[in-house]
Image (cartoon, rainbow, N blue to C red; front, side, top):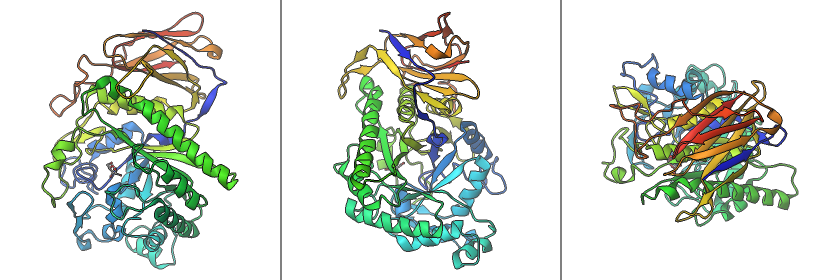
Length: 499
Ligand code: AHR
């Protein structure tokens, strides 16, 4: 097996919008309570925010975080989470069947975002609620003063508006599990009218309409077509969500899943462009891939949870090395369509299907998937170069012609650095790779980071937090004729940085 890649300075897919390295915090499991917030944790600051978690989030350089859900938002009354904590109600939370104590809410999230160096992406409830609450919330959040809701915010200690720019019009409204789920026509109309009113309050905001919850949904892609047809004027983005798993222990097929993600992205782009053509519109709708990850390890365990407790350990997937490879391939899929995927959220950030795990009262550590996300966030900013890839291929149970090499290159012009992200999907053989850098001329390899492990099922735990971690001993070098040559270890994630 071998692989070749050619990239050229002048062949650009698009500029990376940094917001593709976003993430997600939902009131679910221990994402908030025991995750970003734990008032009596030894590292908690005066607001109860865990400093150890904040540090790891800062390390990831996450530019935007979606909140407060997820399925949670479709039954949430945002007013429950503002004002004096002692007055906040304790509610039955129906999406995940827990008790929501409302110790943490909108204003705390905004404060946390500032400390984390990130921006909020707020979702509104279009399950049990609609236009009225959305207009109140945007007034509370973004209007300076002199009206009922903006003055209420000020009375809560927030003199200046939060000025939140990005808003999701509900969550996964096509899903039968969603509280208040809707048909595409019902949702499209509601999204349009709600978005219209929100933009009357603050015309500077950007809105994300709900696309399908997954490629396998029976209403995909008709849903996108109908929703955009009805909400084209107010929507700026259409959302796209996808999770993968390996329940059948078929790793070659699991590693091939991002091929399906490429197809999914392409179909949503085509559908958005079809509606654009129908409307004879100049406006293009871009994609917000605002939920993506591996999710399946915790499914069995979650079925056994007792309902109506506060912050139970839900969706606590412990990620393997092979999961990190899939996450790496998914990041490459996002980058490949940097021209149209403008936001994305790794779902989620802490404890709940997350790169960061904690123990209540104890430490925080990095899961395997932390690393590809970290590398892409740090080095994957700039211009994505057209990836001309030639690679030997294999067939998996669901996909034919899966390339062993999954790769993309990003050019950071100001730093004059090219970074190649590459996954070798082969489980048995290393992969000799040649990258022709053409117009870049000869450079030097700054480093070749490798994430590899003998056991693809290896995981990081509290006891062994560094079992799977990257090293920078990869063998990439630049030849005299301006080619990178490297041997990619079997089942590995690689980051080759050239200057
Ligand atoms: O991220 C976990 C859940 O997955 C979210 O609440 C929902 O939107 C999706 O189905």
